[in-house]
Amino acid sequence: MPAFRDFNFKLLVIEKLMYEDRTLTPAFSINELLRARGIGDAQTYAFENDLAYTVLDESRAYFEALEISEELLATVDTLLVDGGHQVYYECSPVWDGEDELFDVSSLDDLDLLPNLRRISGAQDCGMGVPFTEEVLAARGIASD
Image 1 (cartoon, one colour):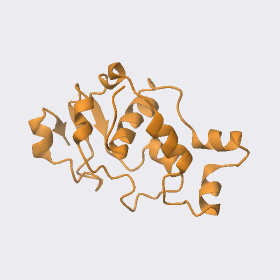
Image 2: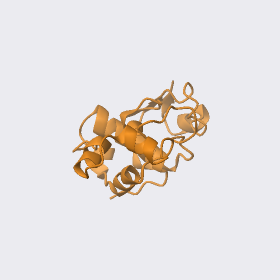
Image 3: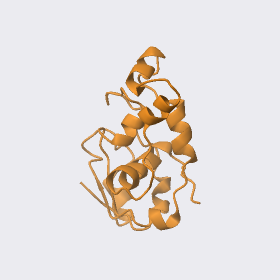
Image 4: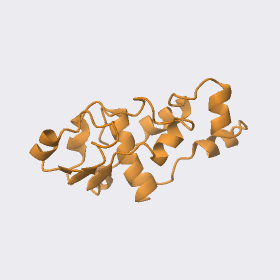
């Protein structure tokens, strides 16, 4: 299975496949996982344990271990960079988008997406530091 180098880039891909396309299943739910452990809802858990603006260990472990086949990665032709992604809620249920918690720091993982043709939103959301138009254009990827 392909290995991602940038956790936050992997989250963008997971958002596309798991929560948008629904081809990467089952969809992870931090609320379901915590309820199964008798903990309650994720937002309360995060606040009560001073974890409000961090990635919960349970979520990080799940998403880091999640394997995505080359066949499924080949279906990714677009990515959306947006602070309101479901995957971000599943990682940090009370994150407000006002910090760099989910900023992508490297585009090395673009090699894992052979059919990626467009990345939307990178310039608008403040998370697009590495998403320069020149770098993407050199790979045949449009950005808006």
